[in-house]
Image 1 (cartoon, rainbow, N blue to C red):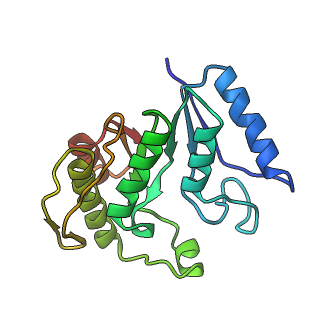
Image 2 (image 1 turned 180 degrees about the vertical axis):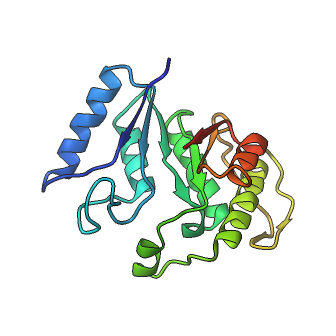
Length: 195
């Protein structure tokens, strides 16, 4: 059995020190993977929007520098928040700098409050699912070695180069529970799902 640890709360003026304590304890305990939420505000299950929340990819990069063995990922990246070419480049960079420990966690997103509050796009559910599938197709190209142009309904990439290559092809985790769309995408594109 492999155990993953999701850090969902950040407290006090010494957030970095507390996070370092948790990260080191998790690695010393043999935890397989460490996950941070891709939320910009705290979510209701953990607290109020005004409570501390760190940006996920900065936090993952910081964590990679303070760990050696744990797999690292976002639980899960909100597809409308980041252009897919940049997201795949970010996940690849995390993989390279962590020595092959990155996962790409990705989903259609649900928190329109934080998106609207920070001026981020939050299209309709149908568009977000279309964006998710196209982002997965782009990940397949960029994690592989296919720099051919990508033209979808949601995204267009003229030359999706991705160098350096990832140390290993980052596994993909798709978040969500919908039987009609999400689980179909999991079966087609993913290595794991977060329900």
